[in-house]
Image (cartoon, rainbow, N blue to C red; front, side):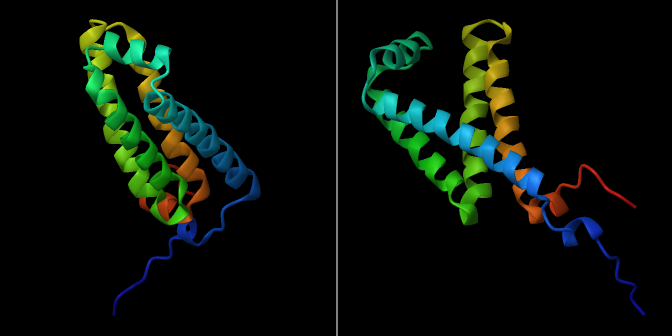
Length: 140
């Protein structure tokens, strides 16, 4: 006879406060990423200058902006949000590597790391399935 373990965390509904905090965190991330992608696509002077200072050639700025927008759209759709977060995590991981290399270990890379944490925290607070897979807090 097999004993089934009941996972109370997976059954528990998302609380209103957690849901709204998660939505707000996700919205902040989405707005920032949309701004970043659009400024790259529109070739805003500051965005082009900052991207070039990091060692990117001018012809990569438009594709980078398109990828950021595509990943952000995928993240903003509830059914594909986890996949979008994975894609954005990969993008931000590359940003961390570039910041460490360019700034020789100065903590400028922390923004990308913290931003990635915000992305996932927003999803974690909204999605009970994600919380059942990654159970940070368990009540037993």
